[in-house]
Image (tube, rainbow, N blue to C red):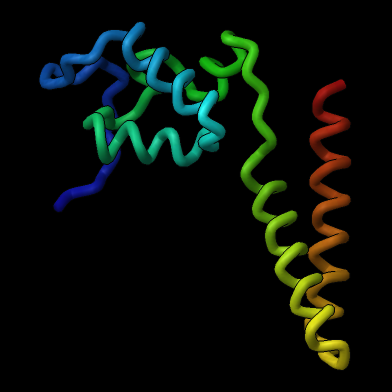
Length: 121
């Protein structure tokens, strides 16, 4: 199976979905709590939409237009990793490598939060 992205910025001839249908799907999935990255995968795999950018714009722009805010995926993934490391450290108190990993992850979380805070200004 060829999984290359479409280079053209034109709507593919074989795609039968309208801009409104794509936007409603994106909004529906976002309200269910699905991240924008996973929304793109679902649209591609289930609905056969190669990319929303050529049809209705970027997923984040669609969500902003409908006043739906999502936490960024990179920050969510870092927080999940920190939670896993914290629960591991509670069970394994002598694990110094996990402690160091938790410290590094916590520093990354702080940096990313600071970045998004400054970017919002």
